[in-house]
Length: 183
Image (cartoon, rainbow, N blue to C red; front, side, top):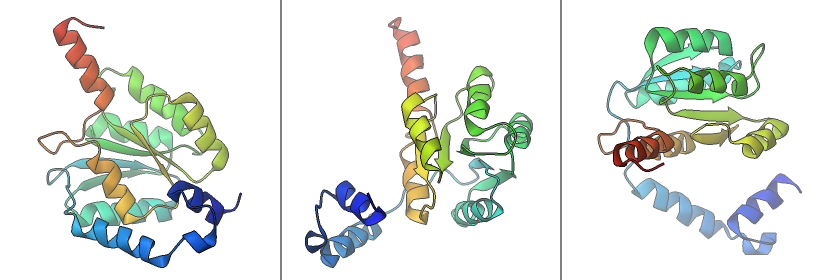
């Protein structure tokens, strides 16, 4: 299945004659009319990716919206940054040199000091994506590379609480269950 077929399948369109340009334009216009909801100014985001291009692009998009960024080109450096600076949100690539993103995510979730930080996993590798969806090992969201500016902020917005702070939905549900005594 080619990329166009995949896009059509996602849009529920079976062939090219159904994919009218007006549908695409209407969708883009609708998205642009809606005001984006950003996290509070100064939200600290850790970006862990071995591609300097990806790190630079994410950093540029996030800083333009008032976020602070920390960057690491491998998981080990990312975990070090995490311990030193405790970010509010993490973008974590799956395929990294040395320790991969899955191992880094496990380390993040095992540490009581970092387990509640939301993590958005990223990958452009089809096998890594399949493994991610097969295991669902504690990430809060997934973003396929390449991605758009819109997708970055859409993923963040889905994780914001009423105070515009990124939160883990699972962690919040677990806390609510602990408070009510339900498990």
